[in-house]
Length: 96
Image (tube, rainbow, N blue to C red):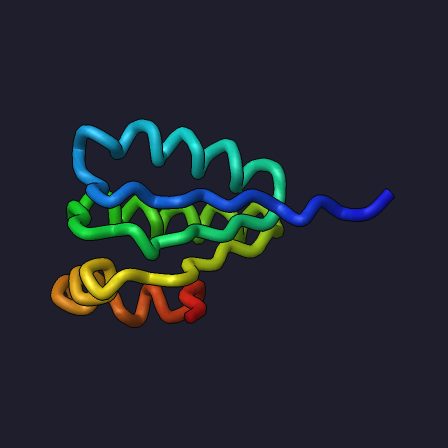
């Protein structure tokens, strides 16, 4: 049987406290079952907590033996990562 291709989790335009629980639940599901791709192309605004959640999800996926990649980052997402000094933490799982 072929290995599953994994899941894609698309981040909403606003990743704040109102959307954080839903995104967290999607990520928890995904990192427990296989490789994960996070699509950050639609993000217009992101809370600091959400960025730390993404770092945590990448670590959880690694511990579970799966890959996690952040692809297609919006400019707003990239700027938030850099402003908070998290570029090094994201470098290990950011593509495109």
